[in-house]
Image (cartoon, rainbow, N blue to C red; front, side, top):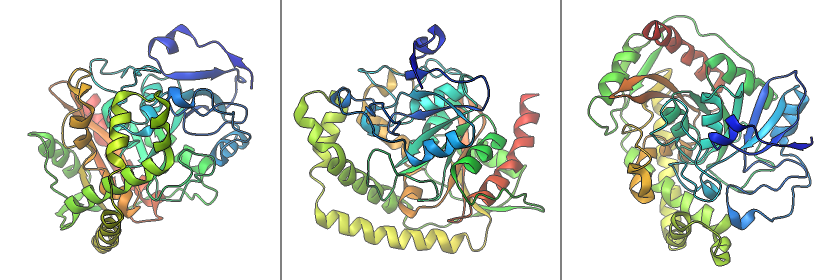
Length: 384
């Protein structure tokens, strides 16, 4: 594909790192700038990688999209090196949240979420190591799916190795999420769930009003029980420790270039201090927490909780990147366990979006998407 200029609309919302000529047919798709495209530099939103050697081949998921007839119309901007949750990027620009321009777009897959919310694409691909699909989806009030770990190929992605990171789609409705997964996953088999679904609500600490709104929305769609996950908070911390170690191992050397943004640079240096003993402890927590989630999902169709423990912060409020990290606390444990999780917009509080998160059984992403369809009639009714 031949490079072309970015349109003024796209440039104004700082979504595309690059844009490409494409045919008039096929679904319009963009991929995060951690995903290789042959002949293009994968910069991960970082000046230190801007002059790296171009990729010699497409990521496997890019080839699957192209083979499925999609137009790859652009690469999306992101929080630098995928190591942040706000989407703020002083070097490559911060994508504007189309529906809520005063609020953060969320990170790290900020551009993918913003492009979909703006209606520029049919769907976009992001990656999620500790909430980096689900948080931007929640901030931009769209749908975002973190698949079961390993369900979507990571061949040709940065980082090359991760025990947490998943590639997955953003879309404006569940139909398009499933369309994207059908293209990305060779054995995808869409399904429809009949009868009443039962979910277990996990009361994670949240700001006032969020729990009530999520419960109210869910009560119109599901039978609701209560969830017990004794090691949920330990899993939050364990996930952060593993993210830190694996990110340092992948890109820590870039701190020596002097070309990494201050927020990510400082966070990387802190990551360097994670010890082998802490990683061993985190891996033990992974085993225990994964078993807890598996056991709970033997009795219910999904686990339900708010996508975020707080309302999306404004751009000004998010200027302290360390203070913003807790917005991923409801997402991070399910990267540790590897379970699929989807976020769905359900309403607003004080003019800021709120989303619910549904977590399903490992390998049963199709069933999770079918369950998410139960929420759609509620959303349409509330918007009418």
